[in-house]
Image: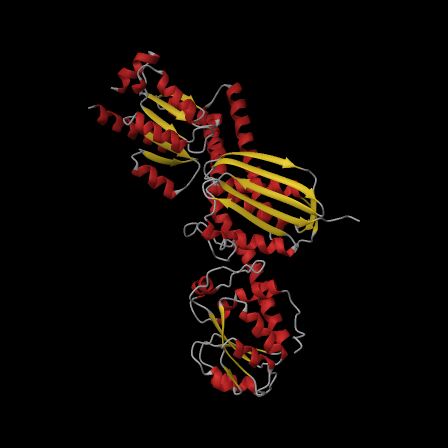
Length: 392
Length: 143
């Protein structure tokens, strides 16, 4: 039997798209349902991520090429459960596939959709009478997505990219929350100097002392100005920025400035190795976001004390950037989950659980790769690989 | 009481001796100006390590009446320095003066028995008030 023609999107896109289904299609409390049913990424087929006990329940109507393609995709996703598939044609290919996987089949769509706990009905029959029937018979809280299979997939991906854009911004803003006390610290110190020195000048008569105090005030104000520049640069939205040649060194330095705010105590030695002047082709803000996230994680892992090694090199047709910290490391049971959206080990209010998820999304966008090696108590190395950008 | 100990040193009449530990010279200068105006002797240390040296250098370390300590400093940071002071010199009252408006950190320190957790930019009346309160504690300990 010929396989389906519908392969318009890469599997990981579908994976990402379906990740957010519960946000819209399960009637539960929003945040909670995202956490429980978010579909984890599958990396290189090694899908060992634990399946949560909560799944998104889907019924597929139509078992032709489109329905079969959807069924195949859904079967690979651990947190999606197909409760049934229907087609008027008993010889439809999707029905046979479903039988192989012990999924209930039917020739009558209405029979299936009256099942309990259906989150989503995907109707790819293109039967004009069906939408009205579904409206009447589907249970409350069940969403219906209809049209051709490719349209359904497209809707999912569109929905996903919309959510993705919001997540990028949300994570950035939430990240600011964790930076806030660091920023406050760096502003409060010079502010104290300014106020104290100004008060002193009011009562001072010695002109030499007044000059010195005025100099201190100027220097303190300049420090505040520098901080203000750093943070506004990072806060700027990236959506309307164009991709361009991005210097890795520049973005790493920028990111270090921002990541400094992430910790109260900073006694971190920074070592930089490798080649300077390496470039990739990307949106600078996105690369900055990747580095800020990774460096912040590294600094947090070291709890303000340790050594951070940054290495950049060009190897064959790739640019490799590695970030190594001497922090607490990641337990092996968490290594599989760190890229899951909303996975975090930080206390409530301190982390969104979106940092690494967003990092990976950006890296993949530029056909890059991301590897993490970690030893508990010793430290973590994050390796980024981007394909070389050739100016020719 | 404090007057008598301080008198042994400066020879002039002071309300007592305060150590300010902060890595920023200008911050130390502002604290010094504020406290000297209020009649205290002020000595400075630029980080936790120097502070520990200062407090151990004198034959009689109790000559220090109050320690005001920053948190983010190189070498030995404020958290470590405060732990050290509390273990070695439990009777010297401590005040934290930091740029971090951090409730968790403040409650943590206050539970451990510091006199006050002050966030920069602190008004001079508040700083002088905290030092005066620290002196009261010091007096109670001495009785």
